Image 1: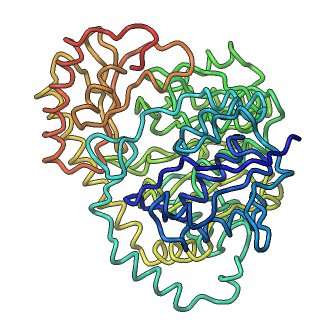
Image 2: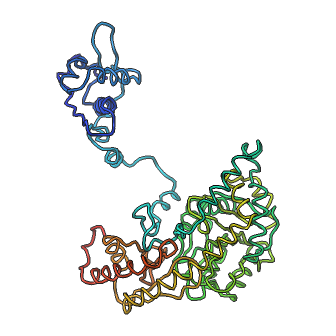
Image 3: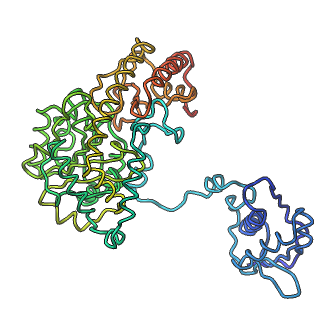
Length: 508
């Protein structure tokens, strides 16, 4: 490597006194970036600390602090009583724009080349659609999947958590049972047996860190690389992403008014290893799997020794009458793994869910502990045992019925003739078809521009898009705000009809 014996008359750096990054850190990053980019050659002598302090209009102590850090990390070599030079043996990433000074971190990342090689399944995962974008942290009309956080008994939950923390045992602090906190597993078994018709013992219940982690765990244990998995189309994007993460091949199976088309599944992938379905309240269409198709699905799984993952994310919130019996309650062959979550019924920040596995798989899942907070599990177990959760569910059913009806009335009043809402008798979202030839993606983007967040049905298709529509979440929106949102949406629909389509190749 060629080593310079010259002297740098100036480093050509600029520091921003208004930046939250300390000046010595800016100087450290600037000099390091120029060294790694090859702008400061190995062995090059740097200006003195006094000269740099004068040039940059900073205190000499600021310069010395940056120089000391660069020397400690090996970028500079300081010679006692002499000068400071760029380390002579430093490997240079010549021609790498990502190291240029002045580029923000995001720009450096985007110019760093192709990056490491990834598995084929990971590349497919990266290309998989993720559904509607989130446009901010605060819930607003009409973000799907957000529960009524304004009605959650926050103070009661805080007192419950405090009680658990105050009397936490050594075993609880140590992590407890890797399959889940025993009182919570027992409380969950009782709850799903009574409310969802699930047949299980506490030993079949395993606590997880949410639905997505539950999918990942089941698919990891069930799939060999390349195995086919039935996924609903349109369907929850997290399901197909979980299949891809596990190395499986998602096979899109159409959903109609009776739910997943089992006959189409048999035609497309008769020997699929797994079917991942939401039979009680399909997302995003909101339909229920008919009894005939439930029985056909169970017969297929028993015949082929396949596994069914039942995603029961929000069907406890049936607005009138009791919730439908879970598919697992009809399973006599031990083919169904039931997946539930508390993120939708309580609040999203509570990353707790659960699996109910067939008796034959208990030993398999016992060897695969889930990463869930034991203290939060204990608090939730107490919340269930004292009846707070059941009371909260009853209150939410009434609230979601009121909010769902208010949304339908507002849509009929403000968007009639353009949108055709589907009936809504469960959960926290409504799907509405576009009754005019209009791109739901364009409507979504136009609504976002006006401050309303809706999801485009097109984003939920894995195969051929058969319908254009919008998904409205109403759980986290008060009734008065729902009407304001539909009025804004009406303006977005009109603007989308008048705005000409953008040219091919441009961002939507």
